[in-house]
Image 1 (cartoon, rainbow, N blue to C red):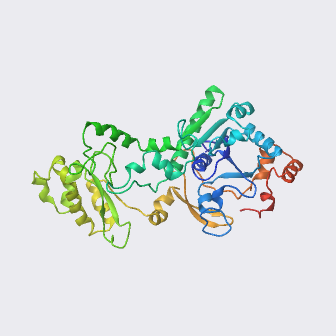
Image 2 (image 1 turned 180 degrees about the vertical axis):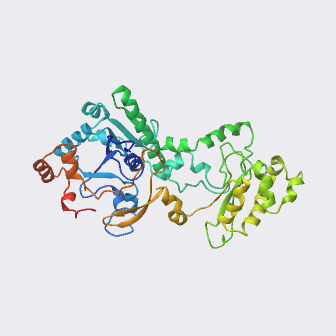
Image 3 (image 1 turned 60 degrees about the horizontal axis):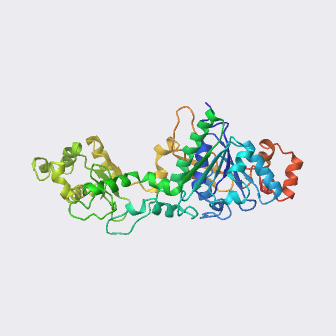
Length: 426
C-alpha cells in the first residue's frame, strides 16, 4: 500500500508552529518534506521551552516528524543558486515568514513561477489584505482578532484564549487542505498557484457558529445561552461559559474528588429525548409528572437548578462511573480528560493518535500522531530530523550536486557542516 502523497516534494521554509503543522501533516501522508533551516541556528523552536539541556525541544520534535533537514544560507550567491535548484525540484513551497520576507530575498511569486511554473506557493499570514495585512501575528493574537476570545469565558469575566491552538495549528490544517486542492487542480491545469491562509480567517472559520449567533441576536435573545431568561444581551454575541452552543442545554458539573482534582468534572447534555432516563438516574423521577419540569420550555428558565440537581448526583461518583451510567441512557456526556489521562489512554495509542517516538539525542518521547486516518494509506510517525542532518543527502540525491560541489558550498558558507559533524543517527 503506497503513501497517499508519495512522489510529492515539499520545500518547507516554515518555522515555529502554523507552517510546520501543515508540512508535518503532508509528511505523514508520504510527501518528501525538505525543511530548510539556517546553518548553526535552525528553527527557533529547537531551542525554545527546552526540558533537557542541549537537545531539540519537544516543541520542535512534535511539529517536525517525517521531514528531512537541510541547512542553507540564502544570503550567499551559492545559497541562492541552491535555493533556485530546490524550487525547480519541488512541487510545493510552504512559508510562514513575516509579510514580504521572500520578496526581499529576491524570490517574488512571479520569479518563483519563472523558475518552476508547476510549483504551488503556500503561505500562512496573520491577516488577509486590509488595514492589518503587514502586522505580525501569534497564536493568541489570532484568537483575539478572529472572534474566539470575545466568545470564550464567562459573562462576568474577561475574554479568554483557549488552550487549543486554533490560530497556529488550525491555520496549518486549513493550509494543508489548500495545498492538496491546488495539487489536484494542477493535474488538470498543469500549473501551480498561490495558496494563502490568514490566521484571522482560519480562527473565524472555526468560530462560524458565533457568527450565526451574532445574526440571530437581531431577532431576539439567544435562548440556549445562560443569559436567558434572567440576564441581559448586548449588541454582540456574548461569552456563554460552558453552554453547549447547540440547541440542547449542556454544562460542566463536578464529580467525586473535585476538591483536590482540577479535572474531576463531566460535561452533561440534557437532551429532551433522554431527559426521562437522566431524571430517574439522578433520583428526580418526580420531575417527569410535574409540569414545572417535564417539558424543555418549563426547564429552560431554571437550567441552573436542573444542573445543580444533576451535580448533587454526579458528586457522589467519579467521572468515568457517571459516563458508564449515562451512556446506556443515551445521555450525551464526556469526562473532562487531562493531558496526563490522554497521554496514558491505551485506545489512543492503539489507533496511532498518541505515539511513542525514539530520538537519537532526547530518547523516547510522546507525540500526537496523524488525526486523519485513511483506510489504504496508513501513516507512520518518524522522528524529527537533527539540524542539517540530510544536507548532503538532499544536495546529492535531489539536486544532483557532486561531493566536490557540496564541499565547495560548505567552504562558501552556503550550507552548514552539521551533517558532517553529527554522530550516525539511529
